[in-house]
Image 1: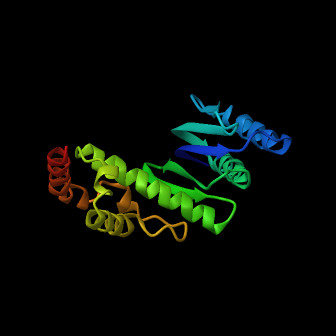
Image 2: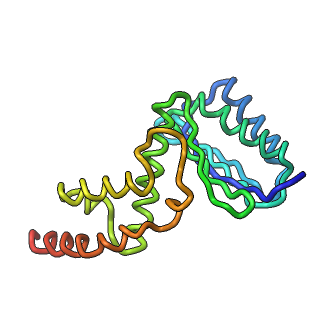
Length: 186
């Protein structure tokens, strides 16, 4: 039996160890079976490595999906922080959060939440970092992010939160005000 499946993730790893290299090789062997799958590692200036995995959505056997998920999850023990695995399963979007501890999974979820929020705000021409400089705005945005994506506790995600939330548009006037304040201050 098969299903349409695809996933992507970015994992921050320390300098390679033999055990970590073995886990990565196992993941590479699994990905060889998928058309157009990519796994790239990029060394950072601090000696750590960013591992990027891209598996485009296509028909995959359930055993393959299980093995791929296990291989990615196996890397969580080596990851410097938790990480998010975004996936498509039979046309439905989802995200799993991986980490060596519940705390690293919560960090991964919070980082993913802020990344998604920043992306949606940027589509509206609003820069999250600028908004967060206003204390009242920062608290309102953080609360909206928590409502839209969760608090970072647990590994669940509401499917509706994968879409652009309604509150993104409501922050446009606040962003315009900030831009005017910034201009006046200069």
